[in-house]
Length: 217
Ligand code: GRF
Image (tube, rainbow, N blue to C red; front, side, top):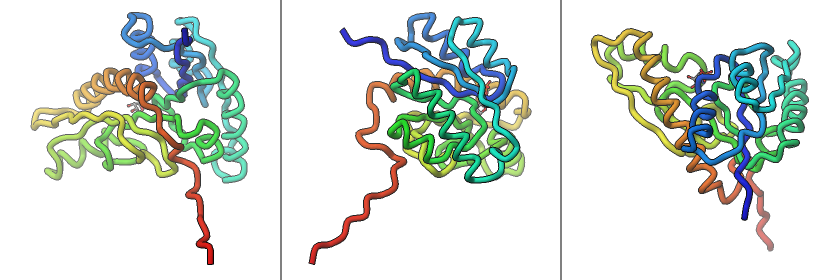
């Protein structure tokens, strides 16, 4: 009988989404082994949540250069990929991971990396997505935002959608209520996305450079 699928979860902060995954595993709604939780910041609550659940953790804090310089960033990504690869994950899950990963990392896992983005596909890429959606709603530009989980490609918060859901914004909404509602949807959607991503992994990596074919003369 095949063993349980293994996932590695990458986190940077509070880890409420990680907790949703842990709870789904413990409650029997998600049949995976969380083989590793990796963070890019020391002492974040997400690491404590993992430790409390008995999940192996590791933390690799980037140096100042590894935030800024492309070559140093690539070195960080290679080190991180080495550590994550050690646990042999079937899927890498970015759950509130606040660092852009280069192809050095992505190619290592053959495209089997998914990301949670607190907005609808194609909207509010990058940081503060909920805040920017809220401002757009206040300006009368939109009346809904949402949550998506997608396969990671080189472009930030883009890539084929695995699952997404709209979150309507009404006139009585405050930023706090919107953040809370988005989080609630995230927690449910991330679990569903992990299930689907493991059931239907990409047939070929999304992140490899295109193969250039030369025409024969
Ligand atoms: C989530 O809203 C996620 O979409 C965003 O960062 C937040 C992380 O929350 N990228 P948490 O650490 O899982 O509580």
